[in-house]
Image 1 (cartoon, rainbow, N blue to C red):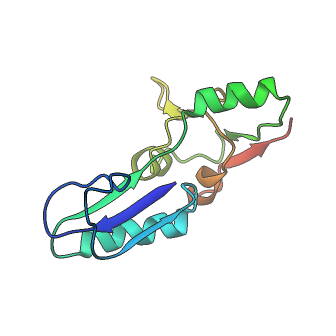
Image 2: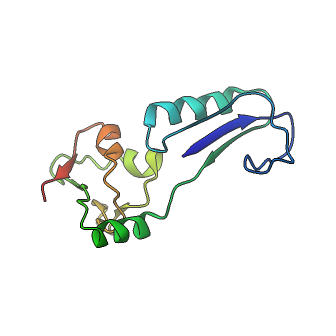
Image 3: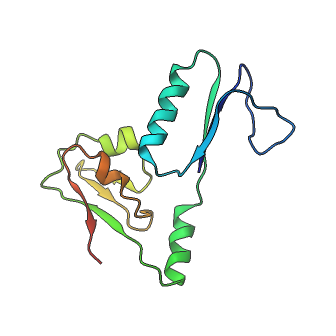
Length: 133
């Protein structure tokens, strides 16, 4: 879940009722890339203080709980032949499951991948694909 709001000055906790937050305040699913991008653009374009708060459960714990419940976890991998090592997935997306090795090959840690598929969406070379389990 992401919450975004702006105020002329200060930092505000949207869950703390002592603060009266004015201006725009919306929330949406964390993995909605389009809405997240729009929110960050609005926050950057706003003339004044703006805040984008991102929050999500720990992916490692969430995946562990899914495994205990025998739920399927979609995971993604990188086709090293298609990957051009542009690092869009690391530098512009910043998913903690994506990392690169000393040889600069890029990989996805399946223990941290939550299966959202956003990495496959943002890869300009379509090198990221859903792994068939």
